[in-house]
Image 1 (cartoon, helix red, strand yellow):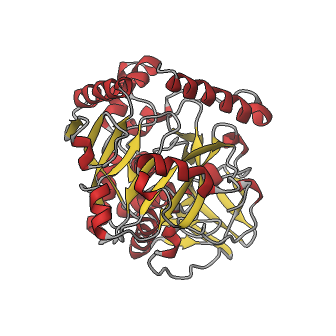
Image 2 (cartoon, rainbow, N blue to C red; image 1 turned 120 degrees about the horizontal axis):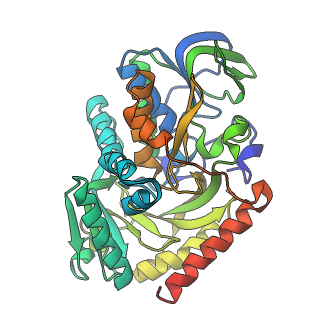
Length: 435
């Protein structure tokens, strides 16, 4: 992966990940050449763009997706593969910041993204190793109490299928001495994200949608006849949707400072004995801990432990991913301290200053959505449905997000990374001393 996502050479191969190595075969899609006319042009072939295109195609719209590299090349094809419901900020924070009406609107949608994924997997027969069950793991009593508060909050918005776990019952999900308890979200889960993206792309094409790969967008022209320009051609459309997220770069200057690329890393162990995998994670759920700089992990379909964590503000890749993550893996499962690592990779997600997804319109016919702040697998699929609703004239749910105030990162592009690192240090220090 390029160390600077704004200085990529195109086309770029998929990251050297477990997902790329085990991806289903995909067709060689054409680059954009010449002039194309469509109803809606979507910039970006990750989850946001694919979910939007599929939602629109299901409504009968003619759609075209323009992707700089390949479908699922960015965060959508290299993330932890976990269906984490909710947002990167709890609903009580949303209520304090934006009021009860906003909290009610966002609260009602907090679990919808995962439901959209399950609907798509079932409808289009997408083979992506989908499994149910996601656990938030508490390392201390303070975190456990925060999870109890989260349950109460989620239930007040109608979300159930939640189960608090004590020190013993959490071992059914992660057989380690590390946790004092946790929260099981039965509507959470995990999957092979790149195969989900490839399956959704195939579904779009089955509905007569077009996908152009290896076609980086160099300019977006709004106005009466909005147009997406690449080096090889242009797409004229009634509506444009910008879904570049952390990899949008300089393409849309108005959005550039509203998110910051943040790198997170994942590694995959060698195949474990089936008995070992079942002993370490008996229930087959995925797990993330409750630290500010959290660890997240799950067992793959072929019994590899996929272990992720680490955060690098600005989106650079550590020189040695394995060296960074292995101590966290060994702390969680000491018996895997010396296990062979077969794959290690990095990818960027887009962080907003508020940690709430940023959706809206640049012009009346140019929509955008980005900044899922670490909850992208599920929230992208919610966003795709909301954008399709808005384009169809059903704006209420989309506008609930669009009305939320978003801020540029302080300090400009020069100082936003060190300021974010300072804030991260503050929260990590509070955790270490027990606050």
